[in-house]
Image (cartoon, rainbow, N blue to C red):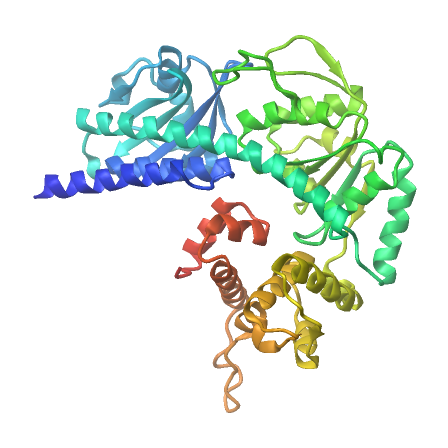
Length: 508
């Protein structure tokens, strides 16, 4: 019975990976993590890593790593051919190792770096069109037992399906980028892609935009998530002499390292396994215009040097080519992270930072310019009337009071989401407090007792966690439980959302 139950669980895992093939995973890092989690569950392992092949640099890159020391090893690199994973990548064959200490192919350097002892391992290639594009390493069978040949067969079946899901996600990511470009163009035509303000603070920031726009200096936009950094980047472009050229967006956090380099700089046919034709990168696509690098703090060190060269020399090579391409492009970058702290940790190059931050511009959070809220409410209401074919005339005074008293930690993006949700739940002609479901759930905090005011007070972390949990749950409910869509509205990676759901014990 135990064997039958185990086989049923394995088949359920295979069915799960098949569902990913038809899913909407455009966040490839999130998909790879899901693949790794499923593989560990399939053979009852303690840890696992997924390494992708970088044929241009002859490297294997630890793209996703799970287990006790996963965060330590992520983004580390091996020479192609080094270690068990390197052997699997070069020979395009699977391996099962009962005792790594007795295997001469085992590379102990990783073990020394992490302090995690690897005793046994399954290593299986990730193949596209029969060529190895990566390797999954499944490490240490739970319960101090050994992996079996049956475990190896299940893993190979699983990876065949995982490769299809990975390829589909890559294709979807490319399609989503093109759709986003078209949607942005349509929003501009409708007037739904512009800065809306009346406050002196935003006017002051736009005066600075006017000053830098007429130059070719790179700009670094700083600020919390949802403050409108992309709109400021567009304003820099539209107020410059490049306004008739392209404005190209890149989310540096949405793609793994091995794909991001190709997206930015392009590749030639044969540069890597699935490079079946030449491809123009985003820098070439932005020629004569502006490229907006969002979440620049997430860009891997291995790509930072190439980006620095573009900033300095305005030139680069496509992956797999020695031909130098020159581009006339203006770079605007954005981040909500502290790049100076990242420099101290060694994860962000100081020379790149100083090149990017020739003109740093801090975008203020919504709580610092609340006088813009009435205009923003009118803007978002008109936008949703158009998109949802509704006929709202405005907000009741009670709804406006609720909105004005809210702190808006998610800034303008959160305000837009709240109005969109209210338009869905409400009934014209006016938005009422009851329609502002997202706000009411977030603000639904138990009151303390009059007799003992401190008894029910939580520590700051617990209070913040409670706030996060309620807000995330309300967004998930609005998105019908679709975590990919919810992550987009929250402006976070889907992997991070999954982690928050687990850490905050959010029931979905």
